[in-house]
Image (cartoon, rainbow, N blue to C red):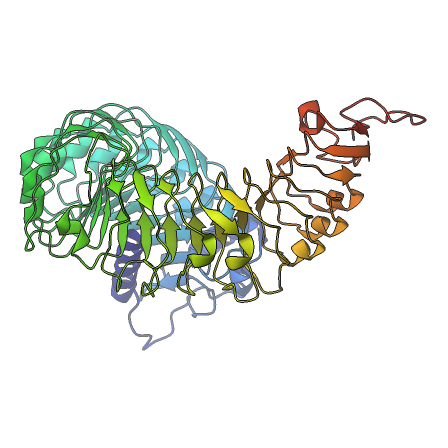
Amino acid sequence: MQLLKWVLNLLLVCSMLQVFPLPFAQTICSEADRAALLGFKAKILKDSTGSLSSWVGKDCCGGDWEGVGCNPTGRVNTLALQRPERDSTLYMKGTLSSSLGSLLFLEVLFISGMKFITGPIPESLSNLSRLKQLVLEDNSLQGNIPSGLGRLSFLQTLSLAGNHFNGVVPLSLGNLRNLVMLNLGRNSLTGSIPSSFKNLVHLQSFDLSFNLLSGFVPEFLGQFHNITFIDLSNNQLSGHLPVSLFNLVTLSDLSLSHNQLTGSIPDQVGNLKSLTSLSLSHNKLIGPIPASISRLQKLWSLNLSRNGFSNPLPAISSKGVPSLLSIDLSFNNLSLGTVPNWIMDRQLSDVNLASCKLRGAFPKFRPDSLSSIDLSSNLLTGTISTHFTNMTSLQKLKLSNNQLKFDLSELKVPDGISSIDLHSNQVFGSLSSILNNRTSSFLEVIDVSNNLISGTIPEFTEGLSLKVLNIGSNKIAGQIPSSISNLIELERLDISRNQITGTIPASLGQLVKLQWLDLSINRLTGKIPTSLLGIHSLRHANFRANRLCGEIPQGRPYNIFPASTYAYNLCLCGKPLQPCKGKKQEMVQ
């Protein structure tokens, strides 16, 4: 996505350099064009960006009208309005006026990131015969993509990504033979990739990701000899990988992940000499990974996870894939036993080998470069206590679903780590060794559930950034400390299936970002505090199997959660359970 934005910005800058001559002489804008722009402004009901507030006065070409550019004859040839990337709260609300189709000299139309511009693309835009760049991405436009856009024969860039378009991709877009970039990603488009797209031989960037497209990956993609970027991920494409795809010597980024592709990776994958990123994850691909992949000299990211790839893993020499930084072979039918040397000996940043049937002691990676490790769902045993001491770049550690056995107090992780997931092992010891006054403010996720951890829940100091704390299914006793209110960023809290006693602290209600709360199967007593009504973002809660008593907080969402949320307590009452004695049940608001 970053590559696409970079190319879009480059094309826009180049276009604007061509259409903005230095203003040696002042030119008053065409009255017809001014009226068309004001027609657009009239359909924008709210503009928190403030851009359109500059559209005053008679001269739209004087440089004061933000986003408007003109040619030397006073005709508007550029309309470029983009929400500042740094401020996601800004937007425009309204629809696109058909008056835009009257800007007959327009070469650049760029309305991006406004979030709440709705409605269809006006059919009148097909009148803009001089248009070279049409970018309407990240709004809320809807309906079908107009087939009339296929008449814009000079178009080089077409991006309608990040809207709510549905229906099929118009065949007429195949008439846009000058297209260099086509991005229709992040919509709800259906049907197959049109056969007419075989005419788009000048394409350099092609993105139809995150739609509902079906059918096959077209063979004609192999004719796009200038292409560098293909993203067809997150669709419903099926069939085999076309062999022609692997003759694109200029291709640097290929993503076909999250589809229903079958068959194997052709040996010709080694021909993609410019390839830097290959993602085929979440498909139904089978067979061994071809050894020719070792010829990809520029490849830095390889993601083949969640397929049906099987042994043998290719024997890659120390000179093979020399640029590799990130590898993900997780959740296939691989039975590795140990991590191959060609992975162990490299300066990788991300290693993901979940469910690869790794056995024995934790492998000793090179410590100087790793930022993410996922070896979950394997058969690793023993301790990991000192393995991460020198991994100063490590940010994410996921070792869940193994047979690791060690004292939590012996675990040494770098200060910059943001996520620790050790759930479903045989870890013992106390939480205070990882949650104390020295805990880094970078740490956002702790999941040590389903282990053998004992002791109590420690006090929480201010300044922590935890978003997820899951300590469920352990042997933790004691009370929930009132200092839990210091976890102001917390979104998910699970302390279920322990031996927690005492009452639920009222201070829990100060965690206003909480979305998931599970206190079930403990020994909690007293009432559910009404302060929890202050957590408006809560989507899931579970209080079952404690010793709670009293009225359930009578407000959303607590009074509309299912009755099972409160089952097996002493004497809870009120909606959704039976009325409390002496109280009439009120209607759900």
